[in-house]
Amino acid sequence: MKGKAQTYVQAALKDKDADIRTVGLRLARQVLPNQLAQLVKSVVSDPSAQVRREAAITLRFAKGPEADQTWAELASQYDGKDRWYLEALGIGSDLEADARLAAWKAKVGAKWNNAAGKNIVWRSRSKDALPLLKAMIQDPEVKPFDLRQYFRALHFQTDPLRNALIASLINADHPLQDSINLLALFEVDLAYFQQSAPLKSLANEVLPSLEGKVEYLDLLERLQLKNQNPNLLNMALESKDEALRGQAASLLVANGGMALLLQQLKGADDAKAQQILYALAPVNNLGLFKVYQQYLSDANNNSLAVRRAALNCLNSTWDGQIYLLALFEKNQVPEELAMQGLVSLSGAWNTDVRKKSREMLTQKQKETGKALPAVAVLEGRSGKVASGKAVFIQHCATCHKVGNAGVNFGPALTEIGAKLDKGALYNAIIFPSSGINYGYEGFNVALKDGSTVQGIIESKTASELTLRIMGGTSRSYPLADVQKMEEMPLSLMTEGLHRGFTEQQLVDLVEYLATLKPKERI
Picture 1: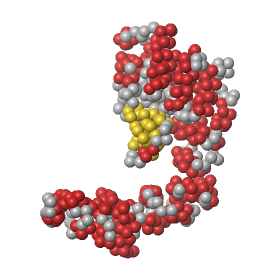
Picture 2: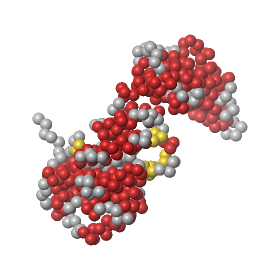
Picture 3: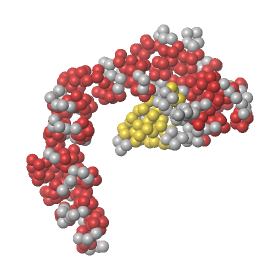
Picture 4: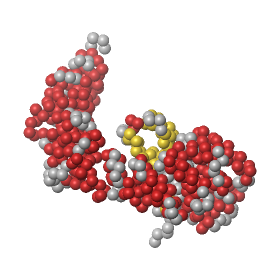
């Protein structure tokens, strides 16, 4: 191709086949980088949208008035519906956003304010799109979905003027003013918010209407508002949504509300104490670990159920598991809870914790236990359903749901008896890593701040990772903060859990699970 690049490219751009013309533009980007504006100009009115999309992308690295005007011509042919054409225009304009938008605006003039023009403004990263976005938001006929989209566009604007524009939108006279006020609070930069009396006042007006909702927690966290601890406490204890309880508890502790929680624990009856402790389970906090240790060790003032709840809380976070192992190494775990604690730790995410706890568990079993009969033998035994349900509530409901009871972390077991026979149920309990359910694979996520978190991936986008962690709480992390993400070789279900039961308790548990089948429908 040496010396003939221009000949071949121009020939491709004149070909009757749209695919060949598209290839010609891709070839031009590689071999004629200094002639892109002129070459694109030759296909600017191509009848194929596919070719024009490729032409817009080809202009990404082209600079100058000719490239700007050619891009504007391509933009003027956008029909307002082809989302790939819109993205191609965005790719072609991002590096020269101000010049591209100015050329397009000069071409269309006052006729920009239509469906196609609004989409182009929405996708533009030019600071000059800000006043146009404001006009689109202030349109009294704007639809709720479009309003959210326009505010989302503000998120990608880097000019400092965006904050003043956002502030100018609040408390106006608009049919969707309540939505505008809320979207403004979620979009304004924190530093600007902290210096703005009107925005602070607006936040105080908006928050009561959001109490009990995820938006309430997100807004408190985003704007670093720390004057809502009593409401957070109530949400952590009373919300019917387990994920919201965990998020509220985490935020409460982060906001210095530990004293409120400890005050609630003092004098609480068994049921209330367990409720408070399990609400705190997802919180990774050394101060709480010490509280759990106190409850774990104080048999005179706390029931076995409360002490077991404290043990489970220690086993609910990465650092908590490390703390619990240290208690075992110092012989500071009461004997009556030692087997359960070691069984729990034997499935720890931390390799070192898992190895050491299994060594301790093996020694404990030599001292106190005997080998479990074969699964075929266990299958032939009958258990008590009521006793098995009690075992489930005590040991399994912290990760699984049956109906509306339990925690949404592992697979729901509401109809498990219709899916697995007794033999399969025994194997699933005794050998949990042999058949990890699709969608419930555990991942170990290392963050750039040095911390590590484990859980099940709920969703992953181009910018954000959401994990469901132990306790059923969902937590989101910017993908830019994730250093490494690895699938865990073992099930998140505790290996050796059955060793914490008596043989009869295991039989009773399987008997109960086998009864969980769909209700007959007439």
